Image (cartoon, rainbow, N blue to C red):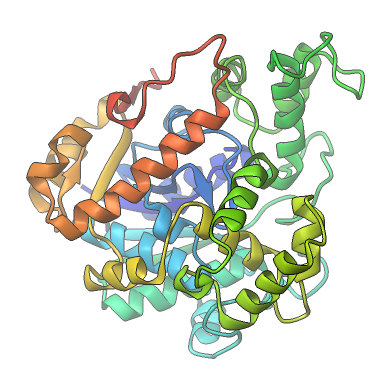
Length: 417
């Protein structure tokens, strides 16, 4: 049995991701593909465009055989923490032979060479270039190259036997917002389409059947179908019939509530909140410069503190992810447990092997977690549970869908046949 691992956010899953999965299977001759995927919040410091269960289903329908959750503590960290957590999870599964990842470079030896060099601060606050065309494809400053380098470093750090394989990114750059037909566009370009689709279905905001751009739901879905696998379109449509699109502005009131209720709190206790950012944040709160989150964040941004870093810091404050949580996670080598989100119905041999070889407890039912985890592991899992419950509370249309909570969410089982 040959198993290849993929690390992803799939925010949303698009044709570029389908290409990566296809190439991963082709290059490694893998029998199975295992994905470690961010949960309901992503690395740039925002809620995901769709919840983890919807994104899991799209990934399985489009080629993945099993999807495990990357816990919120590492999924929302800088590239270093994101990579450490994801690679550690793949390693802990005990069955993964290869790690396949996309990169702008496409040159594994060049990436290995770059991984030996220090090119950014430890907490990775450098802002990425706005487009992959801005610098050479071999630059260590490009988004996918940054993660690729950190994956290689994480493999070295763990002394993992997993072999790295890279696929050159196809189509638009990571930050490209254009959607030309007949090409692989970026997830960045697709998210505005998802927001428009959500606005049409949202009973709180929709006043007619078309968006402000004059497009109907069917027209948006047709446009979306140019860039995502056809099998995922009905899943996305169904999701936005009951969920609203979330971003950081969706939690702005909660953030300001926290700031107002805890004005003297030591913000440096939170993960990614360093002293300089904490000072600027307290000064901005004292000055009461703006109640608008976007303007408030802009007041904090400097050449040394990127907006993505501010977003992550805000998210950690909101979700109460503190530095001592990360210290605790490090005791488990960045992977305290393995939570299965979903699997391909035909992949039961893979899961049976994982159950016998995994070096961390596998969680399929949250109700069983107390019997499988140590208190510290359970405390970290509860961060995921609380974060996802908040996400669903904010995302669900209350008039059409009942909020059931994480404990009642089943593992997604899908079939491609």
